[in-house]
Image 1 (cartoon, rainbow, N blue to C red):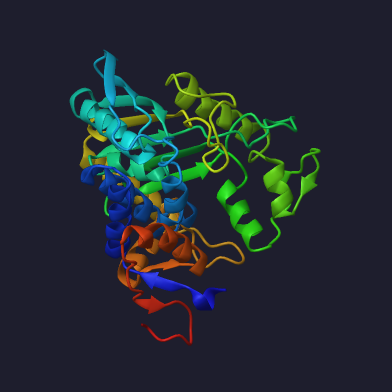
Image 2 (image 1 turned 30 degrees about the vertical axis):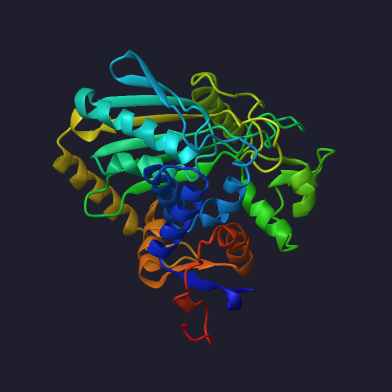
Length: 363
């Protein structure tokens, strides 16, 4: 399979995605926000949330399930916090605005929080947490998703795979970043396995009768499992409360599935928090302490099967540097699905810059 992967420049993919979303009616700045969020996910290796999402995003526009030019309304009950009505806009557009509002308040008050309602799938959660790091803040972003995950002890779904991301400045190092689903694995990995006829590891999912399964297709018809049992289940519900109950958006199983429900808008909510490091200690002191913490971790002896100890966010930062230099790989399936959306609108696909894996010459 890997012998047929081709690599593409991040800038080329960003221009491609921007053109597609402009064609769908988004203003140029909003189209760029969506495109950059997708390519940023690909750069970090979160391919399930990258440009592969373009066709499913585009599919919702003709059905009027997403508003390309939303009227975003911002209200505030306290000076450090805001609530956004996203106007059913694109998730990255609403999320970008919400995190920007949180960061603005953190600059003044040391902390800023934002909820958003009436939004849509916002992509990779780390993308927004990292925006806070650029302003010397600790960033948190989370969002509930459509129901696919069974709470601990249940065989029926109620929560989504509900992701949470935290990003922290780390001095001379790439930021410390935790970005994880509350399920054992992201649902996108199961979709990918089903597409290629591959099994999934035991413990990821249950079938429709509540029995463990390693069959990806059967898992998609069943339910996802939370990681660490009751702990992951509690985290999924916490995210549902902060991003759904508190935001005024869908919660407890009412968010609609982006890939299967084409009757009504998704009604997704989000939650964002930005905390200024300087509110607690001088930034230079914090950075020095983070560098010490990472140095101590990196100095540990690797366990069997490992060559080094990595901190959260380090593998993704390395992958980003590599893909910025050598290109982002796309499977033929992903390339063809985007081409099917782009070319009828007169939007040209970018040229590949290299072939992935040994034995293939660069194009």
